[in-house]
Length: 222
Image 1 (spheres, rainbow, N blue to C red):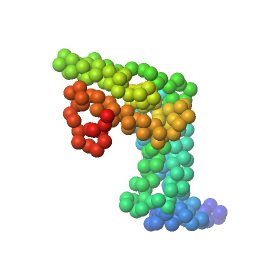
Image 2: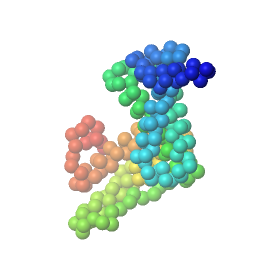
Image 3: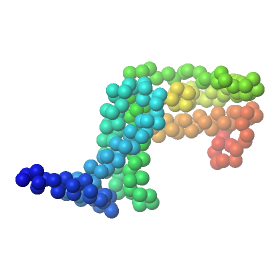
Image 4: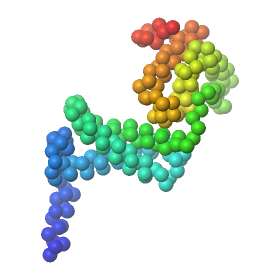
């Protein structure tokens, strides 16, 4: 008899519709909130798995056995972030689309952080040269640009900008890992990276390697 009584409940849970107002459902304690939270966490798990699947090199670096832990951690952290920022949801897109992005971003952060865990962060390595399969003409042109880029990095950037640009762009170090290693924050690193890119573009444009741009800031940077 107890099995007969529980079956309709299970079927109701399996077929119940998602909330029409996610923010209200997630903000009001009760069964509807519990159901909305379960659905949200499942959505964030899917988002995290999708993002991890798009990063095969880093996925291989952490090892298959850690991938599921990373996915679950990313979904948990994304869940906290979504609930903390519920009041900022403006309804310009579907709530699930808005929330899905939290899972995407957090998965990328967690995977990069784990991939760089325990590894030395290179801050002074040189940028790569040219792909081996280029035609002679492409190789000569790319080699010239690569040489100019190296010169720009050496001469146009401050030592701090050079370290940040090489770590984030050339060595693909996670910005969260780099911020932790250098005792700074993401915003400061983004500012340094932006300033470094402006200087590089100005140097390469002056040398005739890039076309002058009229975009605000970059084309007139000194």
